[in-house]
Length: 93
Image 1: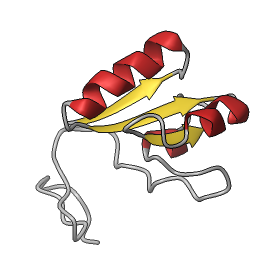
Image 2: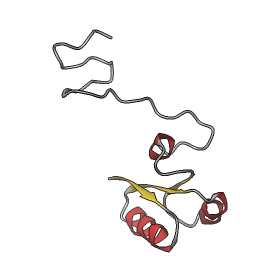
Image 3: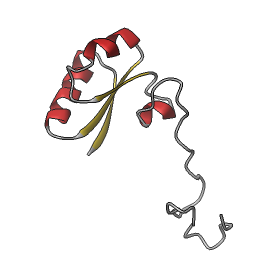
């Protein structure tokens, strides 16, 4: 399971410890660079300094890296990896 834990305080760190030990893919995000640096190597999680509400944090991106591509919005349907939609009214990629 992929999990993002927002906040590397006592509770967030403990949650990341438990989920990581259970072999989940954990990303622990905190705004405090020093707190993130202090946890390096101590928590079985990918650490990310930043705002957990930002898309870059959701992808585990480091500050300065581009955010993940936007997902299509509006209307039901899905898009596969090649950009092809299953909606009959969707334009070709």
